[in-house]
Amino acid sequence: MNPPIDPVALVTGASSGLGRGLARSLAGEGYAVALVARRESLLDHLAAEILDGGGRVGVFPADVSERRQVRRAAQDAEAQLGPIDLLIANAGIHVRSPDLRVMADDVEATFAVNVLGAVYAVEAVLPGMLERGRGHLVCVSSLAAYGGLPGSAAYSASKAALTSYFEALRIELRTSGIDVTVLSPGFVRTPLTAQNAARRPFILECDDAVDRMVRAILDRRRAHSFPWPLATLVRVGRLLPRFLYDAVLSARR
Ligand SMILES: NC(=O)c1ccc[n+]([C@@H]2O[C@H](COP(=O)([O-])OP(=O)(O)OC[C@H]3O[C@@H](n4cnc5c(N)ncnc54)[C@H](OP(=O)(O)O)[C@@H]3O)[C@@H](O)[C@H]2O)c1
Image 1: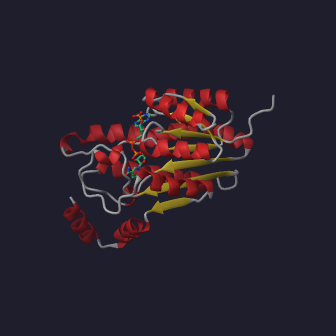
Image 2: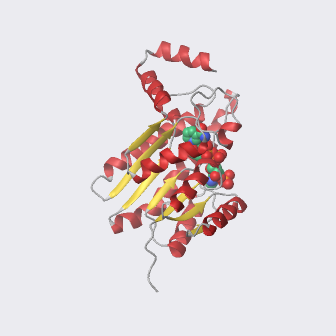
Image 3: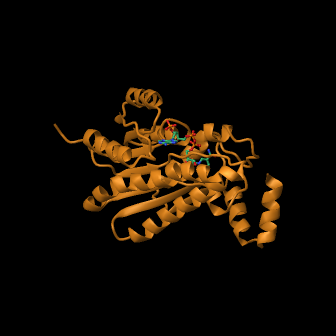
């Protein structure tokens, strides 16, 4: 029997929203996909859809904030599908923190998933990629990484940490054959934004965002921040005097 030749992508947070869309699209691009998230029944449902379409897929339930579970999921995925060529560290949560007195709990919970979950996934796949001298690490960060957002302190801080972590990896890995891509979407219509009542300028439909992300992944771009009007606004926001930044963001609340 010939060994499988399709590349393997491991997608965290594949049960919903962007991760689900990315897994489905990557399967359409010829990737075998390893689906990781906690809600196994949703992963099974997506796996059945991908199998129906003729793709190769496996379901590996895990809580990404648990280091051992992430390692086990990656090991099982490699045993079933083959060496992982592409990691999409996408799993994420957004906890609004209206009560500043308990914010530490929200920060802990958010960093456990949004930052450490991605770090554990990198830890699980990077040694194999280094051995093979090829691979691709992708994180789904956010335009929220560009500055502190009121009401979303934990989220924006976690995304800033995630972006910085992957940027550092990108430079450290530049001669290793492993590419690193930081994706920074603005607002996208998914269950994550549905629970958030704040204003969401330039919001994108999930399929549209997924298409943009898949193109950036296949082009192995170093970074992709979108949609451009909001990406430009947040970049300009970094250059504003702080009193103006504070005034604009206070009005947004
Ligand atoms: N929607 C937006 O506007 C937007 C904008 C910028 C960036 N993003 C980022 O895009 C990523 C995906 O978000 P989304 O909008 O698609 O949200 P979503 O529909 O709520 O999906 C979040 C995914 O993360 C998974 N997840 C959450 N906690 C997990 C845990 N402890 N272990 C394993 N998986 C976990 C969820 O799966 P289970 O619950 O089944 O575990 C789910 O599959 C996130 O990193 C988010 O920050 C979203």
